[in-house]
Image (cartoon, rainbow, N blue to C red):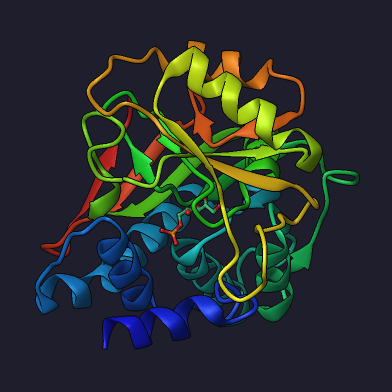
Length: 280
Ligand SMILES: O=C(CO)[C@H](O)[C@H](O)COP(=O)(O)O
């Protein structure tokens, strides 16, 4: 059953865009991590994402918010749904312009009939809302599990406030506690082998090229690049700011999924139905 769910969940061409079933994603992640959870946890995961996303939207998107950055992933879908509800049901936020951080985000904005902006026209973003794969105690985030980290980081960097929404499985004290698939890194295709070797030599661990599920060969990002996943040494003390800078300096690296000193506030939907907010 797990394999069937996984196959259905990940083989859709734009599975995020089609409001992916979070349960499928979670089961996939659990399977990859070699973890299992009981059905009660699995069922509450979607609800947890929804609560976090709606809370963040209601606290951060006001009539004073003119330009909003829209992140990628399954949790962000709930944020966009809440924004659309406020626009189309409550008649609020009618002038709000949404700047996407991926193909998925762009089509989410279009699907919900929101005003689509771009960094060309709207480079000064008031608030950006995005998901994360893991957030540590210092609010360093790993992002890019869905492969959209480059545009996500650019959009987040243009925002006055970067707000993260996630379910409780993303919260940890140190990176690697929850997210076992490593730090995603977007690279120029011709440079992926030397980049892999350099990262392993500089910081240890193991770097792999992310392969596509239904296409032969590697995943190609929205920007036409390859993705590496760096499984760092879980027990090693890393200075993530230095690591991020070090990796970014390697020629051919476009961006890393390490978001250091970027998140202003994180909202975690908890298993008990509450939303926990984290600031630095
Ligand atoms: O960085 C991302 C995509 O590249 C996502 O924000 C991250 O993977 C979290 O996704 P989800 O909300 O589905 O858990």
